[in-house]
Length: 344
Image (cartoon, rainbow, N blue to C red):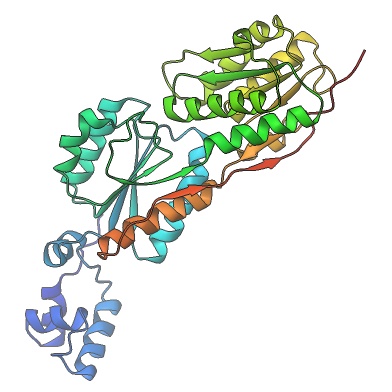
């Protein structure tokens, strides 16, 4: 049987005071003496009183909630980002509503509109697909909104953002392979994240050019996948390996760790020894890839920090402080999946 929730009226009756006196005491109003305040607050605690969040939000015009849109809750990348978001939100007394867009721009907009109806105070959108076409709808929300690793090709967005430097990350990956003596370096990318894929591909190309390594189109495979998902990325890596091996590459730079994991699985199935016969490097540094065989060399994204910063920007905007944009530097994590080029 459900326990009857105590109300302000119940507390007022027990304390022998008016409804308004209890309400003010629970809000620490200076209009109520300290002794009365403490007595009412103690009584409320003893009676198991729980404040009504909806009623409070009507009074304060704030719900102390932040909406977070991610592409998939199964993607381990976003788990760390969410950890950073919740860390800062909780410290500020905010709760986080989470919803997944499954890489669908229309679904993303529907979630944002739902968050708006729920009167969230701010919105964080991870890997957003919002373009300038959606800008008019976005303008109507008037809720502080911050993008995390936005995938929209358009730069017309007027929203604040937090991203990693994808171009620099690709440069670090390819420079690492070049230093190991590799010259035939493949790139395995994806159509699912257009903006970051474009930046990583350009970083790959420009780093080869800076090293006077002639670029070959056949070294590049872009997975057409329809949904940015854990399973699809791993499968893309498995399927793409034969196409890249045909071109004679000795090393492969993968768009992310999941694709690189697929490549490692396919190598094991084909009897290709990594890194002796093929060097493989990923991007993201998700937790699981330090446990694959061999442990994966990768580019680290500061995922928790991205979540923290994005949430802090939302809180700044809510307090009428100027919002900042952040481009975070990636770092190389060298493990056992890359090695010097073996010479015959």
